[in-house]
Length: 439
Image (tube, helix red, strand yellow):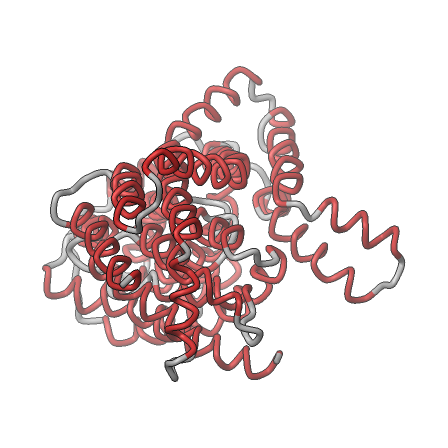
């Protein structure tokens, strides 16, 4: 009975977001309260449980996401992202043009939120495509595939970061495994797939984007400092995850475990970026703080949506429905990773939001961790891959791509939707390959 009520609760959540266009945060809270009532929890305990779930989730990830948004903001405003893009393109040249676009999208996409990276890099796509007289979709898909993979697979993006916390995974290993899966995925879904898109033409005028891409970046920082500063969280988390495997010194391991705390890493990264990309370039501290304030405003709603997912998770744990899920899963022959991927994919198709799809799936499948064969790090990536499946008309990213590139609905489905679906499908395929290698 509880499983039926859970299914109805998920459908209720999907209908609120996709049909009635209710804000996802409010939808999560409404669903949590209704689910608590349906599961038979004492009425006087439902509100405290919702508050507890919200508080625990926000306490775990708010600082990380806020710090990450500030790092992304100064990466853009200082011109560091532009410096990375220009240098990569300079070294790859015309012969390996799309490879350069793919690498740029991946490097710039790691510290930036997806929508910010998209808007930032579209001018570069248009400029390069016009310079070499190539179709814009053909040039752009490798870069946008990289952005999408970073958004769905890699911390410190909100969804993988929150999934890591919810599923009690190791952030460093999620990052390492994410890189291993991401590279072949973007090579196929971005670089190779774009070969089939040469006939899709765009009539967008590049002049306005060229102006925007050059504005405020006359004195941009160098490539080395830009790359090191913006990707410091990635470098640091990876190193801290590897060191305990190559040394038995307890003091060193303790130091690594302390510094590897996501909040500490992100705070150090923010201080580093503030100096190298701001103060060192003689930017007034007051101006930097104003930029950070804008960045925090941009992610406020995302943070609350993540908190809403925590409310639903707490209700499920208190109701005991997680044990019903374990019992049901033990009777099926579906591999837990594939089940997580498929559920995230279905919800993504219904809701449109990759972040919401990932969080909803994690809330429901948290009991999977009770299976001894489950690696929580791979489970994070399985859900992340599923949450990218089949972007279509209910996804803002679909319309951003269509309008920026000024192509037809049919061509948008042929390019953008197929690319996103390939990213998702290839992600789970390479995840199973990685699982076979490491276990």
